Length: 384
Ligand SMILES: Cc1cc2nc3c(=O)[nH]c(=O)nc-3n(C[C@H](O)[C@H](O)[C@H](O)COP(=O)(O)O)c2cc1C
Image (tube, rainbow, N blue to C red; front, side, top):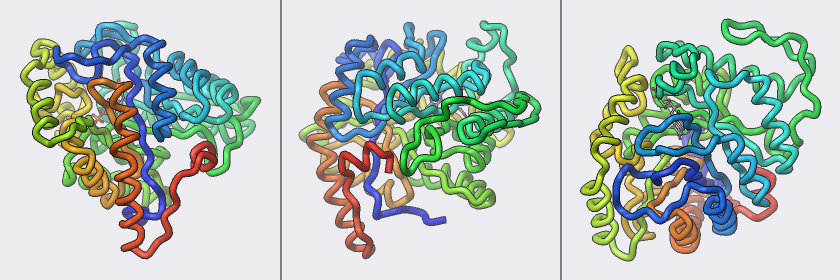
């Protein structure tokens, strides 16, 4: 499997702020709303700025200071209806949904949006959401056994008629969903993203995911994180693509950007970060090999609760663009971004950072002797 594709432009996504408190657990000013009106405007700004995807998070109870939350699938559907090009990825927990119900829901969202619905399958770490709902809380690696079955059901129901699957967690018998998802060139069915960094997560993602998301990582961490996915995918003859989270602080000078990071950290909401650190012991730290999300996160890392500072998208637009290209060389296909002030900074990213990225990508392709295809409105719409 090739390590990096220099002919294809990088894709960009932003985290939908559908929970309160912004994307950093800090009392620093965050001009980011979590209400629908704020998000509707943000989604339109993002699609005009060159973002292809938005990712909603799924959260049922307060954690990391996010005291209030909007449900991910409902919110994503509303954003799809409010936009024209943006693909909206709704995060879902297998333990909370039956895959057949979700498959049907997403087909409807796909019909309403003309083929722009997607899902991010997340296996869960906030135990109290499950136990509080009276749902079983599975041990870490067992969650991925269920997740794999769940994704196979989704794909089966989206692509086959009279679908049957017998398993430990789900049994589907001779089932046909009609209508099927919208036919979109370059896409077999609504795209299936996958979040989870542990060894079990990597192995599962390689076998069944279309896209694998890494939490924030430095270059070496990213390389190491996707190696397991690549090995598992190669054994299954599959070619998943890779996304990476990063918190963007783009300022006129590096000094100013670093100063902003220092202020975020200095104003960290300590009890909320510490509560989060306790809760995530159910994720990476609970695995047999001690690998996985948040297994080695520092207090500072946890302030951006998806380790987004580690990716180091911090500095001038030029520095950030150069850093993004380093990740592209390692195999990143999509950068998932978050900000202090979403509307303003998503717009600024499209204006100041993206053109530099495109020009560096063209140079990279030129040096590698491959043609570089800049995204056009029609290829963005078709998901190519
Ligand atoms: C990009 C990304 C988005 C995620 N979104 C959510 C989410 O919305 N809700 C959630 O409970 N977990 C979310 N997760 C966490 C994963 O579901 C999983 O619990 C976590 O990665 C720990 O997995 P691990 O222990 O296998 O590394 C996300 C993970 C990533 C990388």
